[in-house]
Length: 220
Image (cartoon, rainbow, N blue to C red; front, side):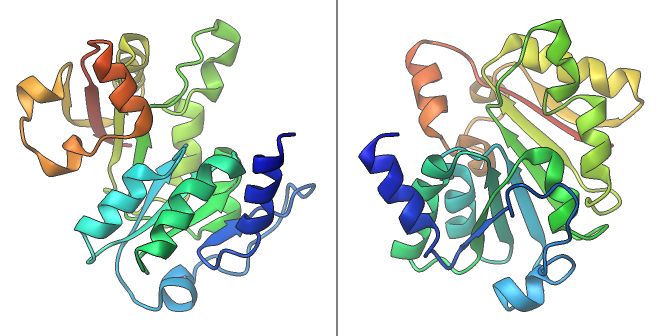
């Protein structure tokens, strides 16, 4: 492992805005479960979760622009989370935190209905048929989200992938989820909409290659 990554992992353990999964344990209830507002954020604002947050650009930008919400970015890659967590600390953003864990473990961290809404930003499409259930907008994964998402809570996807976009719309149709809105090109259909114009590292790379950015919002 590169020296820089080792340094980042060591720093991550000291960050007050980062929670790390107890590795080696599958069945556990994290002490903050059901009490994130009271014990972590020290307020009762709604909590929005970003899954597969990568470097955390979306969570940090949302937290900066919307202090009336709390945001939590979740990713298994500690060296990626380090970037967003460090930026949040430097900017004194108290309404954003990070969890290092697998996405399918969110039920270990959150109580039923504790999450107001979910963002899924540029996930790996996992196009191989054998990986269908692991796609972050598969029915199997959505059923996990439903255990922590409030009734009526929206799941919002941003992606450059036509495959991911089409798969998500198919999942919505097949499972009779409520489609709120969707777009094959957010610049064409929702120009200037602040929530959609936040750009992650990966989104900027895709845009530079000329890929349109797609968006889906639905209620499971």
